[in-house]
Amino acid sequence: MKKIVSDFKFKISQILWYFGPHCCFLEISKKREFYNDGQYSLQFILDSKNLNFPQNSFKINEKSEVSMNFDRRDLNMIYVKFEENQKLAEIQILEDLTKELSEIFKVEEFNFHTKDKNFETFDFFQNIPLRLHTVTLSKIDISIDNAKFLLENFNLDFFNLEKSMVHAPNGPQNLNVNCRKLKFENPNFLTFDSILANPKVQELESDHIFQNLEIQDFCIFIKLWIDGVREKPNFTIRLDFENQREKNRKKFRKGVMDKLGELGIVKATKEQLSSGTLFRIYRTDGKSASLQIGRYFYFNANEEEEEEDSEDSEDDEDIVKIDLKKSYKDGRGDNFGDLTEEEDVSSDSSGW
Image (cartoon, rainbow, N blue to C red; front, side, top):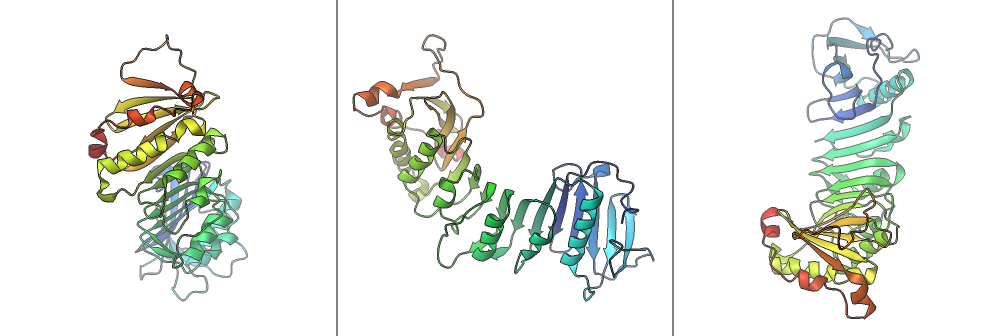
C-alpha cells in the first residue's frame, strides 16, 4: 500500500467513501470539496465486474490474508478487483483501506456519501479510527433508528438528506442531535424541540415544514438568541401557509414581530430588498441578527457586533428605524404591527 501511494506527497485533508448505483470508491484528497480533480486526489474504485486486470496485486497491510489485483489506469485512479463472494466484502475492504491510509497520512476528516444504496445498519462507522465529519444520504430511505444512531453518536459537522426519507411510524421523535449543520428536504421525523434549544445545531436548512409549528416556537427560538443561549444560529425553514397566500404570511409575520419588544429586542430596522422585507433586530449588547418571514423563516445571527447607530450619524431613507424601548416602557406594545400591515408584493415573486 505504501508503495502505491508513495507518489502523493501532499497533505491529505479527507477520506471519502462513496456508494453509487454502479460503483463505490474510496477517495483521498487534499481539499474539502468532494471529487477533486488533478494531482490532489486519488480514488480506489472497487470493482467486482469481469474486467481484464493485469497481474498486479497488493495487500492492504502486512497482516492482510487476501491479495487483490489492481489496475492503475492513471495517476489518480486505481481499480481494485475483488470477487463478490470474496472473504473481504466492500465495507471490509474500505475499512481496511481507511485504517491503513490514516496511518500513512494525517487525515483531518472522514466523509460518507451513499446514493441509491440502502444500508440496514451504519454500525461500521464505529470501526473507523477517524472523526465522522459529513454524512450525505441521496435518494435512499432509512429507519428512525438509523437516523438516531447517526445524529446522536457522532460529533457530525454536516448531516445532509438529499431526496431521502426517514421513516418514523410513530411520528416526529425527540433526538439528542449532535451535529453542527442539518439539511433536510423533509424533516418530519424530527421534532423542532430537538434543535430549538440545542446549541450544537448552529445551521438548519429545511425545504419542508416541521409539523405543528406555531408562532410561539419561533418566539422561543429568537428569545434563546437574545439571552445568548444560541449565539450564532443560521436557520432557514419553510413555513406552512394555506395556499401560500400573502395575507396568511403577513398574519404570521405580524404575530412574531409583535412579540419582539416583549422578548427583549431594543431596536430594529426594516429594509425593503428585492427578496422581500428584511428586519435587522438588535440585542442590548449591540449584536444583531437578520430576520425575514415569508414563505420561509430566515434567521441569521451576524458575525460581528453591530455598533449602535446614532440618530445623527445615518440618514438612509430606504431603512426604517424602530426604537422599542419607549413603546414597551409605557405598556402600549411595539410598532412592528403597523410596519407589517403594508403590502409586501416582492415576497410573492421571490419565494420569501
